[in-house]
Image (cartoon, rainbow, N blue to C red; front, side, top):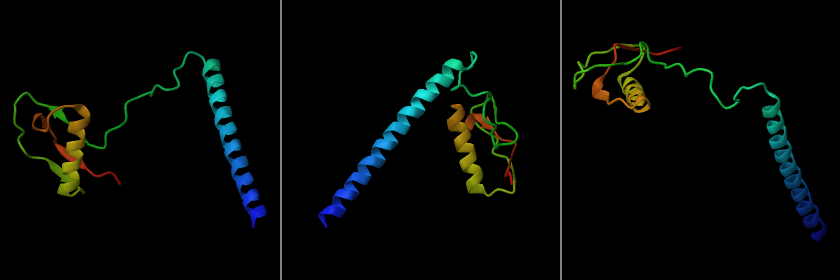
Length: 106
């Protein structure tokens, strides 16, 4: 029984040491690749993500929205969630956004 316990603990220690070494190797390789890459920031995104809302919400000057939106293949609850997410991401209050239509992408 004690011999099985020692083998188990030794196996766990070996696996943890190998994982630690692998993590160190990955860090070193990523630093080498960054230094060798020509003046490109690896962490920069090339373009903004595409919004699933079509068309893009438009900020209006009034303080209230007109309340009409065309929903295509999407239920009211999902459309409300999309509008809330767009409002939160853009920082524009929901009552200042005008959604013309919301279409579910298949």
